[in-house]
Length: 546
Ligand code: NOJ
Image 1 (cartoon, rainbow, N blue to C red):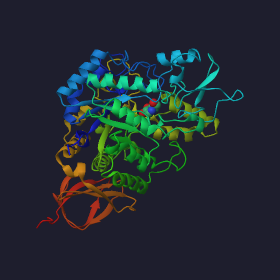
Image 2: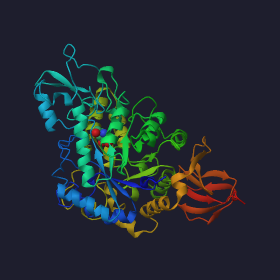
Image 3: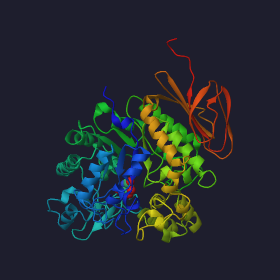
Image 4: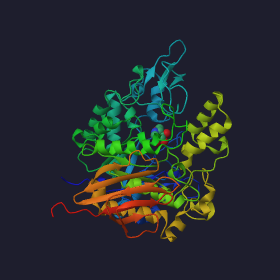
């Protein structure tokens, strides 16, 4: 079997607006990314997932695309994009584009045509329904709050939008829509991109009349058609964003025999700090037992039948060191511990910009600090529903997507080295102590720790292929597991809390990596773990053949 390169790869997500601004307009751009390739090369990553750089009115920061073939003026030009692909190729980095095809912008020419008249040839590119007695066709909700149907004056009908009203949903049942999308994907493939991250791909099979959003009846048929018509057989990498996936569904997407996608982002474990049955704003302390048992379930269920992606962060999630680590006294230790338990599992790891230097959540003080439509709408809705300002702010401070969208902290100079001008959004004031320049000067930094993890994944087949077994599944402090491959057995342990913890294991082992000074070996028996201590050890087992 030919090895799939993406199984040993590590992906780095760039949110271009906040990464690096090359021309002083305060918005990160493609040339800014080009100027930092040396940094990514030094980190050792293999793939860049580029969040959207397409022309967009930016109602949802680029996830509302008005031209699938172009580059937004604030991001650069198509020539810059070609240069980025070429320069990445020269340093062995592949580009994975964000593919946002469940909806377009309402300013996309297809929608402008579609809304103009019921007879327009583009009308059926979108989903239109008549209202019911001056009401929306049904009560489906938008993820950003409110009803998912918007009334359109021009023709007196409603169109569907699962996100912002400026993000009308495409009608995938229409063959012409799918053909347009295949054509566009092939355009980017021909330009040299090596992968696609597919935005909310699990809703393309929607059946709004039956109130079906995710996992619609034709979803997998569409993905198989996509595979055939575009990337199938072209040695690329694909990952679908699937909020509604369980392990059975995860296998449908990622079983190579089915020729759909290579892997998905599923979010079950990311719900470990929300009240069950409610949404992400309904907070509860981290349930470590749920977190690790959920990871373990995916590790085991997909073993040999699919492939996992491994991530803590993205542009949609708060910063992990603030969320499940400790962003004050143990920032460095906890960031390394979280990295270890994640990268030690089976799957392809994803790093979100700034995670590798331990960037933290932003210290928001009021609603005026938020730029994201999701946060602003949630504030208004919860205010109307009678929540106190403090309760709302607590949820936002912990979970708002804007936490991830502050500028990348490059150095301690003007605006953290992100721009020579005024940044479009906040810079976290802690950039004086937390920045890439300082991380590169400190051999014990989080950056170099990530570098080691990335290298280990390339060198050690046990990380790529080893079986996974969760240890002490009910322990409320420690996440520990064993990976085994060939004659290698690796033990990965992380103490998730500030309180010291005890862990016992009956074998001795050689320490491969840790976030504290260690002896070179651990002995059988009790191991005392310091705050947020983590270890990867190679266990000394008797060879099977001797
Ligand atoms: C998921 C993206 O990651 C998020 O940022 C966006 O708001 C929605 N999809 C809609 O495109």
